[in-house]
Length: 117
Length: 113
Image 1: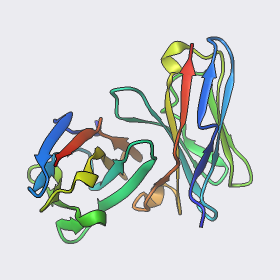
Image 2: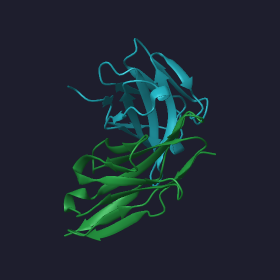
Image 3: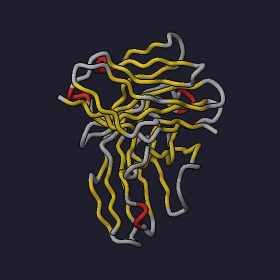
Image 4: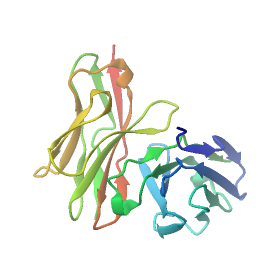
């Protein structure tokens, strides 16, 4: 079956503009995660969803970042008023269940490379 | 505080030699430990995980990792490296007490032909 998909694969934007990143998880996966990978850095956890709710938003770096998930499937990560330091690869992952069952393997999408000029 | 460390930014190994990629962790409660690999221009892929049971865990592509509670380590190993193993490897730890998963910074593995 299809894996996790993300769109766009690349996004170049100007400082101050808003961007929206999309993630389509594996069908049937109730848990969805967003991460950020900056150059030279490890993966930074941003947020995870169990169904449509987000029990843990503590990883979002600022109030310019928000995420939503509808229908227990597609999720969008929105960055408002982008800054140059937002440039990174944004990775989405999904797993069968939530962190309460964090033993479930996370399957990662290919990522969206965001460049803020 | 929960943390994971990969002390080596890069590891170089000759093809056919054994390889080790190091990972140490700090959690409150019991750790759940993972290794992921990122090949060039591809997303992360799951390699293996330790939840409970045998300390030696076997995973994909011939990799294995040993959970060492006393040393709080979960080093990734392979008996004989292949050039195709060259990639970026991430160790991750989850604690059900902290309810969050943390990834290390990654170790770039170069297998030299």
